Picture 1: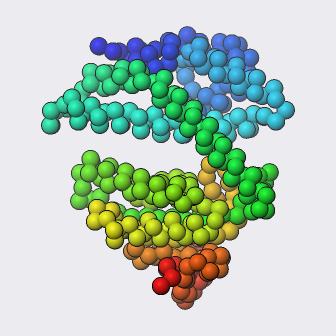
Picture 2: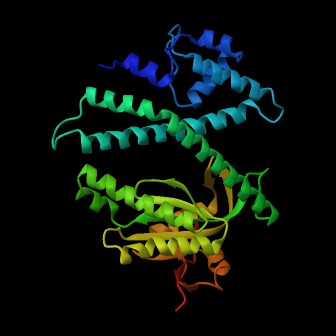
Picture 3: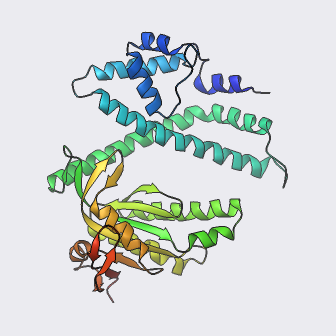
Length: 328
């Protein structure tokens, strides 16, 4: 049976052989910098004197040392990117293991049969055999996303809607969340709830992609999305909220969208438009979309917007919401 040590060696391509001091010497980085990167990736500090680092870890840190020799790369940049890698890869790895466990449960286990350590070991061994294909997919997907981000930055800069050096851009940002999610979740078992949330996230992601927007993050019962074009963001919000009327299995959704200058940082967005979109979503009726005045003005030639009376929104004072609708 596969042991924990055997599992680690199989997936890491070698056994741990270096201590903190030894990995620093092998990589050429200072011990402090090396351990800061390690923690930024999301791993705890190993006990002093413990062999916790592999030859692959040493090679990766040597690559980082070479990057730091470039005049455009500094320690702060490396730490920011390390945190992004740790968070993204952590979720991706958990997702992959969950998918394989589900697949094994469907094909190898009898109804009601418990998953054992041996089952998990078999799943991981199978995953190891498929790693080369997944790694190629990961690299190509990353290159594609990098190219798309670069093109967006160039287009936005040319249109004077973004300042990459300041990390700001003029975007339409929106939240779409499932109505009465807490009540619905109490009526479902774990598998049903997971499938329910997965379907919501999948549909929202597909709609965003088709319309030229992008998902910033998913939070279980809600998604945060953005688009350079205000009309695209409006259409995304409308299509997601209209989906429950076209598909009985899709939840009722409400959405709020705002338009303005946001701060871009590590793949996330911050600023007043983000807060405003969140607050608008919280006061929106089911299957409806509320937008702020800036987005209402930006989409007025394409969509109908109906003014509501100003109302206090937490942290933002009195704000006038607009109901977004399709033109008759």
